[in-house]
Structure formats: C-alpha cells, structure tokens
Image (cartoon, rainbow, N blue to C red; front, side, top):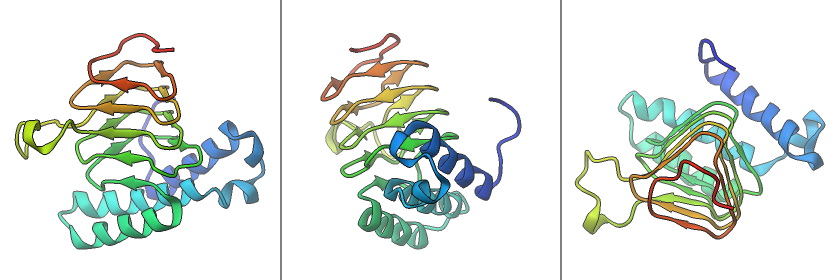
Length: 170
C-alpha cells in the first residue's frame, strides 16, 4: 500500500485493522479495541506527534502511561510505520532512533535497542535498528545497534541480532 500517509486518526485506525487481520482471536472490532498493545500504539502515535513538535514532558508522560497499560515502552522519538502490529506486547522496548517500516509485526519481549551508552556514537548518532517493511520479529528477540533489517525478513524467537540482515533468520 502506498500513497499519502494518513493523519493521526487514520494511522490509529490502520493499527486497529492490523490487529483484526493478524490476530485470529481479535477478528471483531470490539475485540480488537481491547487489545492492550493497540492502546500503547495509540499513545505512542500521539506522543510521537508531540515529540516532533519539540515537546518532551507530555510525550514522556504518555509513554509512561502507555507502559503501564500495555507493557510497551516505545520512545516517542522512534519512527513507526503504518499498520504496526504488536502481539501481546509486554516487554517490548523500542529505542529513540529506531526506524520501523510498514506492516511490521513484533511479538512480546522484543527489544529494538542500542548496544549501550558507552558505544552509541553520541547523541546525534543512529543508535538503534532500522527495520524494513513486512518484517516479523519473534518472541524475545533482540536487535541491537545501528543495524538494518531488510524488507520481508523473519527473525526467529530469542535471536540476538547485532549485524545487518537481508535474509530470513529462522
């Protein structure tokens, strides 16, 4: 799907539709609306908009609330594409400079983080992964540092990824 990126409400609706499409237990709208990770994504989308406008306290509060209600910790500076789907959600961490493409699926306990403050390369550096479109990252996987994950890649559960991946890691 291409074209103009929808506004905030359009992105939120697309995320809700992704829940209905990718979670067999949440095929009805009312069921999908009670999918806790979706609530975390809604708060992330709002906090990201505020963050891009230079706000820091409001996005921080929204991130904190999102963590409490959904178990997700998504930095408001991270850039998530369209139709994101996070299954279960608890323990998912997405760092500040992470860039995530469209139609990405993450399972619980996935970390998209840096390798550590002592080797980050400074405050302006790309410290977190760049994830392509249509990527799926399995339960408990960690993708660390400024690595690139190519389009369509599937990363198996509990993998530790420290370098670029252009093909499936199954």
